[in-house]
Length: 317
Image 1 (cartoon, helix red, strand yellow):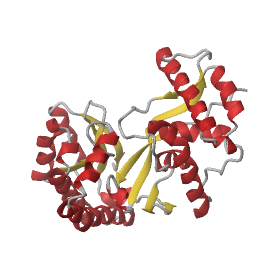
Image 2 (cartoon, one colour; image 1 turned 120 degrees about the horizontal axis):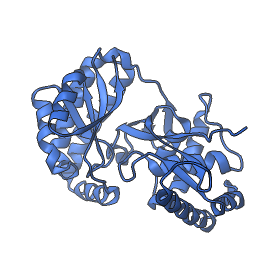
Image 3 (cartoon, one colour; image 1 turned 180 degrees about the vertical axis):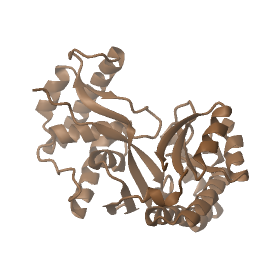
């Protein structure tokens, strides 16, 4: 009997972009709309063969990285290499360079199948195991990004929302979505272009060398970020949407270079008519923008009338 391979989901960092660089709070959720699974090219299945071959080549490089960094202390590298030689690849619908954790999902899948002694991905996981997993995933995902926090693969592996208190304290949480109103929603707006995280983060850190900018981040941005997270988890809808709007306004003023220029007008429009609030989803520069609204029906109509592609993350109806 053939068992379907386990699927690993995209992730969305609802809050915490750039703030976590200051060891601040973050909130990350798995997003089941996009997902991936390990598969083999020679299986009798319909797929994009060019994508599959490219994925297989990337896995060959990944094997070299694991050996070079001596990560085979916790990965069965010989088994992985043998499967890669047989045509192993990652069949994925997660857009690349969109801030949704495509390489994180791959690392989660590799760890689950090839770890020498894997930590179970279930709700009874202990705090110290979460910290250990994050450290392991940080090492694995650095094979794709050069440097990784380990949060993306951790979220994909555990498949539950993660509340990041700081770099050393992470816990599983649940989100009380139904407290936010009948037509409330979290959604994505597709900018139709890929983002590039490294130069944007570099530019942000350069800006933070200026004391005035750094103080604005610490005194205004981070408290807004943390308030949004705490209010979302507690289900405090009125103050949550007020603070999301303030966070959106802050990003419009101070993160302008990270917002694709053609989306500035619709960003302003949502704030002006108090219909929705947009914010960065990840580092920005492209990929998706993240939206929050208590009036999703009209928000969808408005954004679609302006030619924007909308993807629902969560809708209360």
